[in-house]
Length: 251
Image 1 (tube, helix red, strand yellow):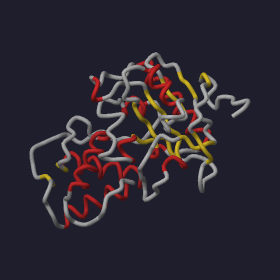
Image 2: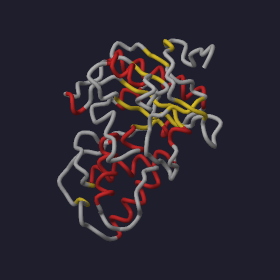
Image 3: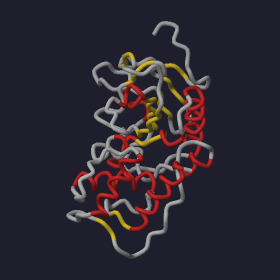
């Protein structure tokens, strides 16, 4: 990594040894957003650069908006772990990983500061432009690793990113009382739900049975696209929001 110049002009460079070549793809076509889940940004930065951790990210964004680049965008960082999207399982090879400093759910989970999110917006905009990354492929770690990961979580302001031209979003349908799909349900309605989730990209088996994995994927979907209530129950609001997302892609 001799002579490593940042891909993002505003970034400081701090090289992580935890990287390798991309596999089966010449450039990234996805951005995956994480939170650090550690008590301090300094601690997270050190961990991502520690060879013993065997983890890294292309970028880390501190609370004050300061950006650190650790791995070149042309290289494969080790951020996604076991994950999948549209059937692809080596997400590290096709993505740019951004760690956003936030202690996470186990340490109080504060809101993300505006300056930090503004920096994330600018960073994502630059990455997407450099690699022609579609809006719908700006995703959460929880989208590509449902159940195993829940970051950056339901407090992450996806709407602020979308309003600035980053990512894919539709207004969440209102939550109302009514019929819902949940654990143990089976039949054509469950199969249709699973098919729609898979069509958007989520890793879910189309079985017609609302099993634990389906609930986990519904939670992941809600956490990103209907964060007001994350309960794994596919109520009318969840299903209508998913339908609107798919319609907006088709349109």
